[in-house]
Image 1 (cartoon, rainbow, N blue to C red):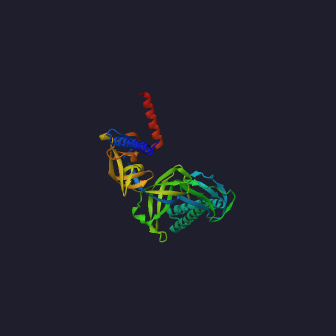
Image 2: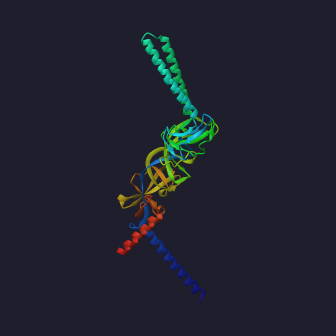
Image 3: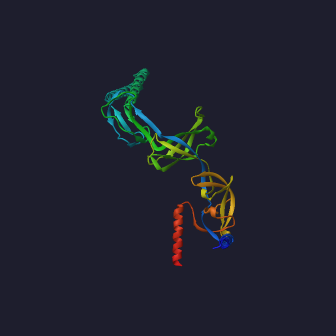
Length: 376
């Protein structure tokens, strides 16, 4: 074929390709300008939620009340009245040391007390008959008072032989047996009040102005990773550590199940500035430079998109605080923000309220579409 014919065929091919591309571009432009065109999106509601600014710290648990009972005399153990981990009431006898010698002294003192009471009675009778003198009565009364003091002293020593629970709580493990010899200072049993726990932790002194008794907090521990324990601050230290520049804080946690134990390490989250605020998922934000926008769905205007600038506050896992630009009850585009522009109309596939995964929402939407197609 001549060269000129080949050039003519090539020119005709280029013209056909150009016409095809022009048609595609015109079709795309027409679709973009089609007022009936809609984009399917997932929406999220603007809700009012309790919010606080978190401050994390590490804390150590202590029992609300804790004591280690020890002996004050040298004696052998005569009775053990508790088992490992037993709950006891205030005043319950836990350990009794051998007090046979003191009991014998008490019996002798009480017999002497009876004798001295009789002597006082006889002296008064003689005085009433003008046979005795007042001095004899006073001597008899003094001797009776001396015996009373002796009885009180013996009873005090007997009390040292009995270890009783000073408050209601849970005893620790028993490491002694009946017959063991104990001496003053020997630790015999621990007693902890575990229905409430003290949680001690420190925070940087820069946050001192934000701390106050009564602040709410939550705490978690590796021992119970699925459980969140809640409490409140009860006191704030009066001094700042000059080395760490931190202040000590004490909180109280209810522990009705006795699951927490003294010495546990806990991750503490203080809830600063608690408030009710507007909250949306982080996925709705459309950043532009240092500004943040959302795609609001005007449901009263046939689901048209309104590009709104918003002022955001604090963030937490998957959520962001909205300070201005939206109202409670508004709907915004949660998924599909890159496919819509200001003024577009949208179809809402589903409402993401945070209770389901996006994959589940899309699958449910597909199932609804398929059922709708089958019914048609």
